Length: 215
Image (tube, rainbow, N blue to C red):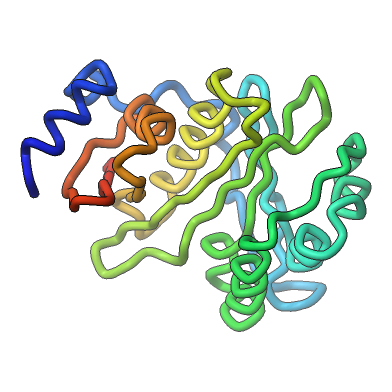
């Protein structure tokens, strides 16, 4: 890793060290296991599928809900009891959701690591972002997270709040020792989200930064 790249980016971010004390406090992360796969319904369906933060509910979608996310966003909003927004899933995300559905059906015991999550702003009953893990723990006991938020809701700390809660939940799961992430090296907003949650840069290329936060 080229330390000059990392040092320059830390200067852009305004601070170059990991926050003391680990991740911020937990909200709604105690109690019984969050997910159970299988049971009634089709393979990949989940039970107990939401995390709460002070301003949002982060909901893990079922296979059917992900079909609506891909094909009929208004039906998804209706099923979740949300206000109609006129949104639709971006075309470039449709194949990603389709692959996730396929993984959930073929490997229901890993459904929680393949499903899509939506971040719902409580005060507006509106989906403001989406998040997902990119598969079950790898050989290093790491899971990778990705996320995106509506630009209208940027600069409010919502992505930090949602990503932080997802990371806290993941690090509490058996077999997970770390969460990793990738950002383009000019995506300062996304870098700030990761740094606020407690991630540190572990490697870099001319185009991408690779981040990690551990238990």
